Every structure is written in structure tokens, then in C-alpha cells.
Length: 61
Image 1 (tube, rainbow, N blue to C red):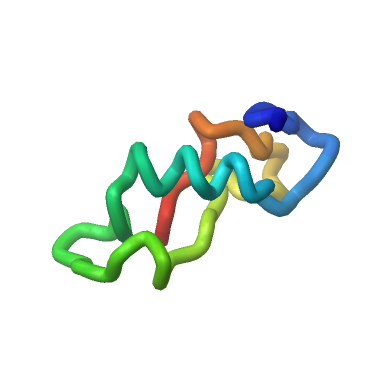
Image 2: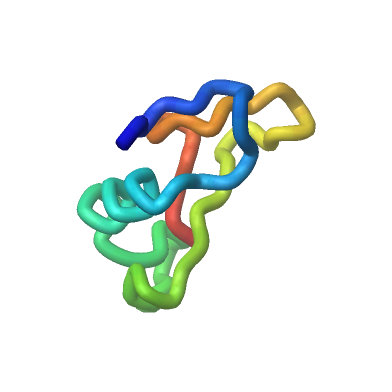
């Protein structure tokens, strides 16, 4: 399953969300204790600002 979508799709794939779950191990916001199952994948550089849907530009929040 592709983990790099670039600008071909805005939403994170199931594979990307699984990889984020392993990487972030829950919400990445400081002092947030929510588990990965209660987070969503968000772009660090917003999609509207040219951000890519790649693992290095996604974070669990």
C-alpha cells in the first residue's frame, strides 16, 4: 500500500494511518494523552498551502 501520495490525494490512506499509529503512538499534541484510535491524520503543512499527503507531512492529532 503506498505511503507517499504527494498531491494526488488529500486524505491519509489506511496504510498511512497505520504507519502514523506506530510512529506517533497517540496524539502528538503536547500533553494530550488520547490513543491513536481517537486521533486523525492532519497535514503539518496544510494541503491548501501546497502540503503533500506523505508520512513526513502527517501527524496524529
